[in-house]
Length: 444
Image 1 (cartoon, rainbow, N blue to C red):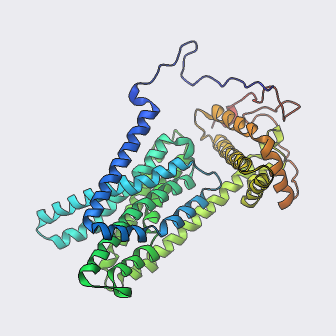
Image 2: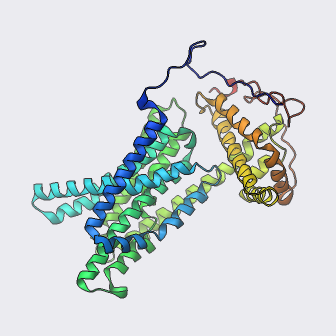
Image 3: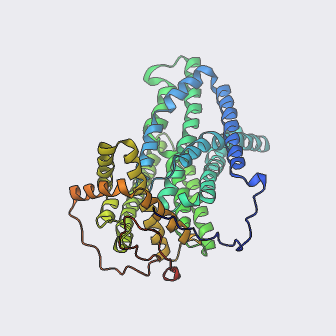
């Protein structure tokens, strides 16, 4: 029977002294309860506000039409996140924050600021213009950025790079746009009810075409710039305090600027919207799409580059770095496990792939001097999770390797000096499956 070794003591905990229990407000269930309560109350308030402005029938019509782009956008962001999938709870929180908390902040703050400007200047038309082009971008992007900041601070292990920032920001903005579309589409439907508009000439059809067909990616595109800023901060070393603050702030400013230009398009003449759409939004969308896809491919290259060191030490099979660095090979491995052992086995292989990817990213940050103080503990945890799933995962990954490519020869890398030591002579059943760690090679 394999013996599970003890983990190293928590940094900063004095030997021989019990850890102090946290105060009641520091307990996890208290924080989760407070967050869920906040989101539920925000959802109820925003529901009442939108229904008050659109009416019950308009709300139901807006809800039915606004839901169309949501599955497509979520599927696109999940596709980007397939290399190292983040937990669903982060995505659920992000969408709920965007749809409830951020939308509520935006409605209340925008309305208050616009009314205050109209009263102060006695010019309602200029107040509306200023509210749309200046106040709304600042308020809305700040409210959406709060979700990215919360995940960055409190789910740091799940937030390790640019793709994580893009996904969290994009899902948050998708939730925000969903609520905003309900409001705009419901209001348009109410206008048609009063004016008798119908068919292609109706305000509802025009609003649906502009917001759902032509620009469903608008809000995600703006907020993704903030997410990229936080992603760059996540890749920075802990000692780079200025960079970790300024880069996310710069991303937020860019998001506000792009949002302002988009909202100003209606003031550029009859064809201003289409001019801004063609000359500004489409190129920006293409550039950011290329960036995130390129980043995704770079993550796969990082997996193929970093994991061979663990192969040489005996922790991974010879072909596993290749398989784990190919999305097609990964899929074949999951399908093989599901076909032979069922859905639970396929899920186990998917978890093995995710943990191995996290291990590669952790080692990559360590080699660049960007790993946190918990590097050793985290590496042990990931190795432990891989070892637990090896009986199912390794045959599946070997099948995927045989199907997609011949097994590559192991690289001529040393087996020691990378923060681990070689496992025993029987690597598949070691009495103590954890090595001795040496962090010196990772210091910069």
